[in-house]
Length: 184
Length: 163
Image (cartoon, rainbow over all chains, first blue to last red; front, side, top):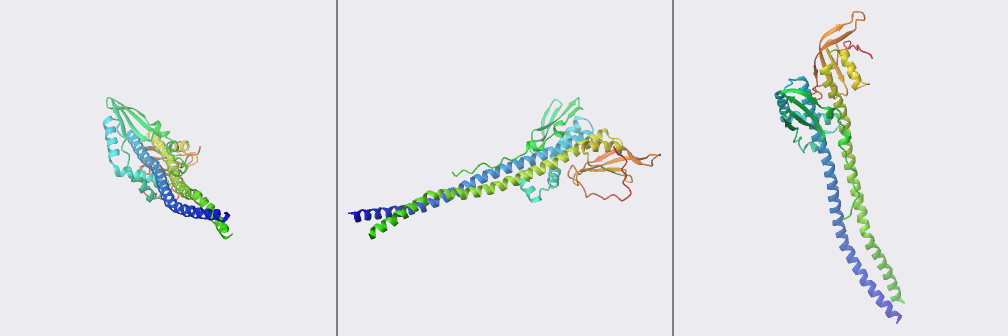
């Protein structure tokens, strides 16, 4: 009677072992695919966040560079609305000079050319002149930075580029540490 | 007796395999987590470093621009320029080139400005030479159009101003 019970136990064990081995191999493939796709997806998402921050900074540096050129041109050139408009247009449209200026700043910051090229793939800033209403002109001088110029009857009345002078780069450009990995 | 031993061995084996099945997921999670942490950490550190380098470097650029803008509106002599330099950069001083009637201020090797003056003034008592009549300021280095800096010939530099 005892022998019969052990026989049944052995058979059940053998069946379960086979079933578990099959299950183990099936899960192995599933977990492997799951792990790979989860890692790929989450690493990709994080890298995209980092790239977005770097590209954001690149475009802001372009606006920052253009803004200083405009301020300097306004101080040293004719104090008229026409001269200002021409300076805005010339600065914004000279993409070669803009790229050169931003790239120079990155080189000065010891960023290698290859890294610069990767970031620069995003292109230059799309916007410079933000507002042009009734003699009041606002230009972007970086992320969250606006310089204001006021003209009355075609003559420059005031230049307010305090935001540019006091611009704090570290407050505007940063990257969050990666979130914990989720096995989904 | 024989079947008893076999069934015991098979039971032990069953428990072992069941444990392996249960631990299998944990192993994949660990491996995936390790790879994720390693990759994202490298990306985080690399990106942060770029942002910081640029942020820090451009802070200097900003000060030189601000100084150039103030200088072109207020400076008349090389002494005025020296005062302005010490206001923006207390530890860095510019230098005059009496021969070229210029004053060069270099915040870093990348960011510098060169002020051009109209004439050289000589103090009759001390024979000290200074520059006056600010004409223009070369901001090419700030616009990314710098040329290689020329070394000034020796003996031509004269620091005329001490606070």
